Length: 226
Ligand code: NAP
Image 1 (cartoon, rainbow, N blue to C red):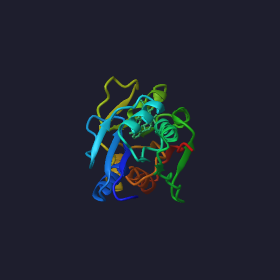
Image 2 (cartoon, protein in one colour):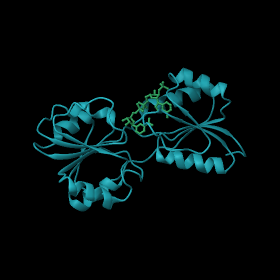
Image 3 (cartoon, rainbow, N blue to C red):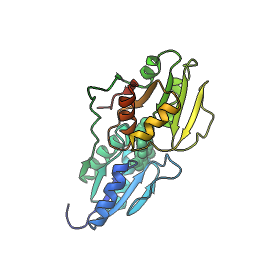
């Protein structure tokens, strides 16, 4: 990158926080944009803006108004709308777009994975009377509400704003641990029989995958969008 650029960094991920620090140290002016889904987002180096732009055209306008010279898409791989908007906004404004997309986790020989296309398939794949660690993000609980026979252990960063529409569930508040031993302890303590999660790649959420492997717990895993 040239000496000092004004960068819009589309974030919401651990990688974006690390990148903001790196670019700021290198002398760039970084504005990290987050959707504002968590109540206490991680601190970032440089500036931060919170909330949607109002679609691709409005993002393009924002890029112009803020004299942005480069956009970096370091968003979550399941956040496909913001990535599509960034592509369109950069085409409109002719500002370069650098896509830092995570690769999905590869399945290791000892992994017991059931790969599914979406949340609905994940919900129907869970065996009867399973005890499930549901690690999928708070907006995605609804498809599991029909499974009244299953005990769900739901990990969320913030407490839910409305009651969860699940018959049998336990809330576990907090972010995933990077250390797989903590994830294994959580699974053992709650006698988890299955993990349901998305293949979101990256190091931050991989602990549960290692823990499930070590404990020989099957993982119902939603494939990363292409
Ligand atoms: P999305 O479907 O890609 O985006 C929906 C809208 O949210 C966008 O059109 C945009 O609104 C706004 N938005 C999203 N990311 C933004 C950002 N970095 N800066 C400003 N606005 C942003 O993403 P999503 O609804 O947030 O989440 C989709 C999936 O990704 C979920 O499964 C979620 O769990 C996962 N995820 C998302 C994030 C995240 O930070 N977004 C983090 C972790 C996981 P406008 O059209 O109004 O600009």
